[in-house]
Image (cartoon, rainbow over all chains, first blue to last red; front, side):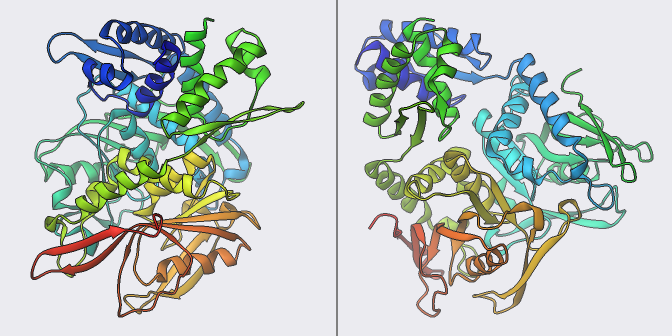
Amino acid sequence: MKRSNRLVALTNFFVENPRKHTQFPYFVDLLNTTKASISEDMDIIDSVLQSEGLGFLKRTTGAAGGVMFIPESSKPKNMQFIDTLCKELEDPIRILPGGYLYMSDLLGDPKMVREIGRIFASAFSHLNIDVVVTVATKGIPLAYAVASFLDVPVVIVRRDPKVTEGSSVSINYVSGSSRKIQTMVLPKRSLWEGANVCIIDDFMKAGGTINGIVNLLDEFNANVTSIGVLAEADDEEEERVVEDYTSLVKISNVNIKEKSIEVHAGNLIK
Amino acid sequence: MKRSNRLVALTNFFVENPRKHTQFPYFVDLLNTTKASISEDMDIIDSVLQSEGLGFLKRTTGAAGGVMFIPESSKPKNMQFIDTLCKELEDPIRILPGGYLYMSDLLGDPKMVREIGRIFASAFSHLNIDVVVTVATKGIPLAYAVASFLDVPVVIVRRDPKVTEGSSVSINYVSGSSRKIQTMVLPKRSLWEGANVCIIDDFMKAGGTINGIVNLLDEFNANVTSIGVLAEADDEEEERVVEDYTSLVKISNVNIKEKSIEVHAGNLIK
């Protein structure tokens, strides 16, 4: 295979398989070439990925040496994306009765969801995450996007047990906003003891739901390494029950009468 | 930019942006090169994508001419994937009380979900799909995977209205298996009149849920072009209420006593 063809095949492989450790002999066989040629190919791919702010190739030497594509989202790219998102969310047409914001169109766009996933995965890249956990329903696409860049599975917490998931562990918790007692369940076989977890959700107000997930994960002796929320609501009336989290945007001052919303960058960009 | 660097940048662009029509001047500016060079790059990328069974570059000429990556999944790849999936599902450890199968681990693997999405998107590639519709919860990741390859949005039907989605249209329908009356809702602003829809779900028995979605979509004058289900259950006792669908696998003869399951390829591979 010629270098030009190899570069196309390898780039596709890395983009489709982020964080997958692959040994050089695999590529040598697959592309019918030498280790030296593969190594030069890697140099080219690595330099383009880095200059485009997409990530880098992490190479390890030795007997089990190989290569892994670590996707990243550069700070300028993040700032541009979050800026656009803030403007989108400030559109007064999004205001719903009760002061809620309609966001389903944005969450329904696979490309936008993928970018959000790339940003969180990049922010949590240094943590040793085993699994992404979310709660049904709106956090699900975001959780998959993050997990695909981290090359880890997704586990979904539900509000009600399902017969198709077998025996489950459930907890009751008090929702921050409604002050109602709610239930969360996780199938027993969905998570192993001591897993390093990243929690992803679309929205956080006081943090009651996230706190519920944390308590449920305690039952599995899981280790919560990180919490990522797309949007946090700035609410001065209520105290946050979750302290350590990363948000992309912060929604404040939803004024139903004047039809105005203020949306700023969250704490991901400090 | 040198050809080798251009090939990496362009391959990444196409893989990240399937079905996005891009005009040549965009690439000429971005990569600081000539149209002739870009055209040669496209030839190389197209030939590698085709020989690897990943899809092809569709080029259009004329004033608004450009290029679009159409992802595909080749028949041999589909057969291999479905064969592996069948063997995975036949593992007796999956049998739950009531004869249900535990599939959450497979649906929790972002890579597996992405491959299923690629296969459906490839099978429905010739249809002019505007939006992928699914019902909460398990179909959601599959729907996003299909939609990302088709470059269209996802709309999620829910069992209960949510305050964060505004006014909704709801229908009642009779569930095929439980014979209970159930509700489905879709926010009014989530779908436009006359949209060409592809319905995606994880599982179908008699088809009551899918039929409910079809009836709900009727209220939006949507045009259902295709229905894709990951697994269909072979049930001789009940009559199917949905006729025209595409399935990846077919589950039959779940024997709780003998702890055995039979799983065969669905009608996608005839």
